[in-house]
Image (cartoon, rainbow, N blue to C red; front, top):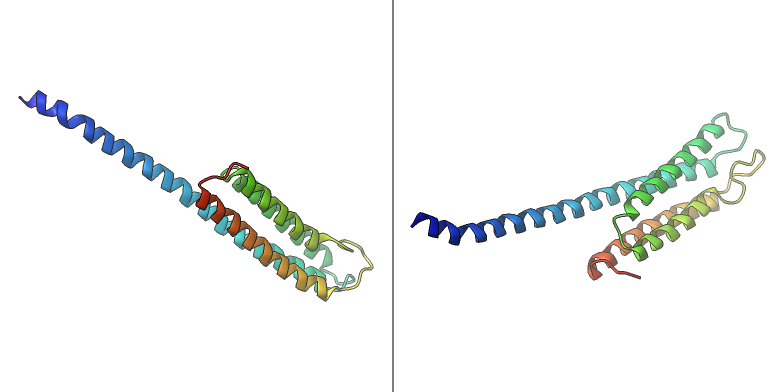
Length: 154
C-alpha cells in the first residue's frame, strides 16, 4: 500500500526538486553576471576619472608618471573585466562591448598620451567623460538586448 503511494509521489517530488535546482542555478548565474557588470561600470568611472586627471595635469608635474601609470592600470583592469564578462554574453553583445571599450580606450590614451612635452588637454578630458558614459550605456544596452532576445546568435 505504502509502496504504491510512494511510486506515485516520488516522480513529481523529484521533478519539483530538479526544476527548483535548475531555476536557482540559472538565477544565480544571471545574478553573477549582473554583479560583474556593476563592477564594470565602477571600473569605467574609475578609468575615466584617472584619465581625466591625467589630461588636466601639466606634463612637468612631479606625479605625472604616477598618474599615467594609474590610468593605464585602470584601463587594463577594465579590459580584463570586460573580457571575463564577454564569455557569459552572446557573441553580438561581446562585439558591441568590445567596440565601445575600444573607443573609450582610444579617447583616454590617444593623442599625446605619455609625451613629455604635451599640453594639458581640457577638451580631451571632457570627451573622456562623455565616452565613458557612452561605453556604460553600450554595455547596458548590449546586456538588455541579450536578455530581450535570450541570447542573440549573430
